[in-house]
Image (tube, rainbow, N blue to C red):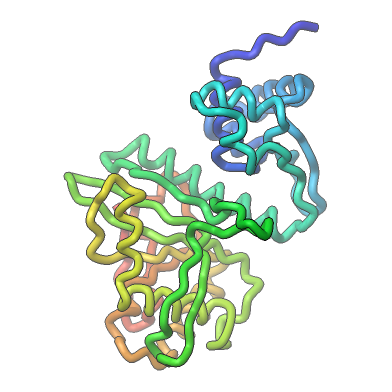
Length: 290
């Protein structure tokens, strides 16, 4: 049976390239009126060899990534050579359930942000996901977002961290920079040397050092005087534990903690509403990012 590739099909392939892994419902939210319609077109693109479909234990939905013929379609649409997309050419199903669930969580946030901007006066200047990077001569991946900074609480120690994502918004000619962390509730929130508090120490030191200003080149040369770190977690209890841990941690600059914001859930309809709490428990204000 002959299957015609439509203009929307090409857009779907480009989105799968941009997001790397997408579930049926995520593709639906981006391009289709129903999950049934989305699944039917995704099946057609899989039959044609443009997409690779797979299941992962613990995730109920089928997940898709580009197959080699799909990268050729995307390269043509983006007017680049297929070699420019070689990082995605042989995308395979990840075997780690926790990795994929976290990855899809990042994409959920990214999709909600994109859709929320479509319905608001805010402009999304761009979103850089954590997996972007370049292969080194040793064959490893050097992640673009990974940075190292001197620990403001201990000048003899360096802190390295890779955010889950970085994006910038513009409104009324003013731009704001944001880092995103999707927390799955698997890391201890009270150990200073690792996990959540180590990431918090990194962001505070990053804020003091000013290294975040390197992202001006990624977002149309906009000037960023500060940034916000947004932490999306999975329960109110978890969020409260995070807030208490951050408040009790002996950071030299107490005011610095106020740029760390958390929430338990965010959708396209609540993204720019006051649902964000400071991780300083002494601050009970509800903030919004738009």
